[in-house]
Image (cartoon, rainbow, N blue to C red; front, side):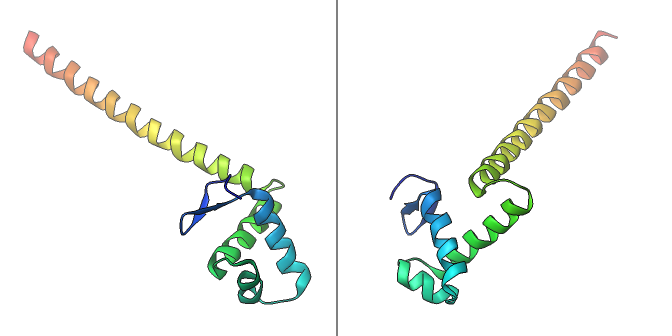
Length: 102
C-alpha cells in the first residue's frame, strides 16, 4: 500500500488505490463520508482525490501526471527565482566595480 506521495497520517496510497476509491465513490451512489469510512480514509482525502481526477480528466491526463507536472512547474519557478537573484547580484557587482574604476 505504500508507494505514492499522497499522505495522510503517515500513510501513503498508490495511484491505483486512489483511482479505485474514486471509481467506487462514483459507482456506489454512497456519500463521500460513507465510502471513506468503508475504506478507512479521511473523507477530505477522498474528496480531494475526486477533485484531482476531475481536473486531470478535463486536461486529458491522469492525476499522477498532473501532480508531476505541477511539481515540475514549482521546481522551475524556484530555479528561475534563484537565477534572477544571481543575475541581479552580478549586475550590482558589475555596477559597483565599474564605479570604482572611474
